[in-house]
Length: 159
Image 1 (cartoon, rainbow, N blue to C red):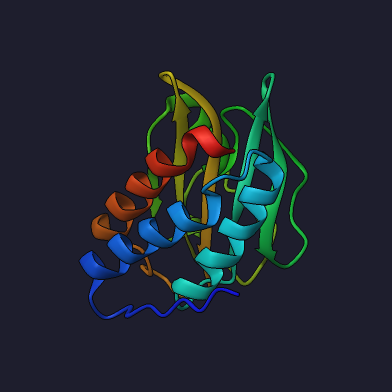
Image 2: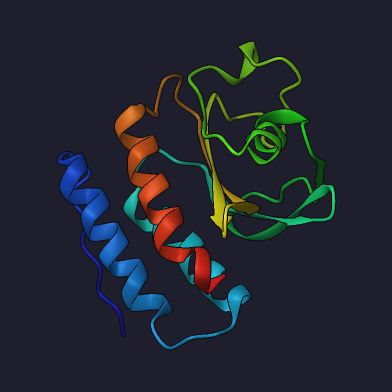
């Protein structure tokens, strides 16, 4: 049984604890889907004010929905389309304070107002993205981006 406790008020500690918890969850488990499922649940537990936490996997030129916590979502996103597709195509984190102002935003959940998408890199290539949505404008900041980028590096070999 896992009993994780996080302090969202202290972001450096939050993200250090989140990375440590992720290491514990993936340790010794070789199934990438199982690892993504546990990590999506962990993100939902650790990050307040998120209405969607999860993964998209890069399959050819398309992002394909992976394990997540939240409402049903778009299943396939072409590279370069929407926030997730932009992150996957560029290999760069997309920190979007207002998704309604993002050209080409794909609204899987009408309640989402801000989004953070971090590419997951293995051997320098994008293999997927971590996608976080919030119903609050400006929910994510650069500290969140750095924390999720560090998490992506920790889990890249396990998914």
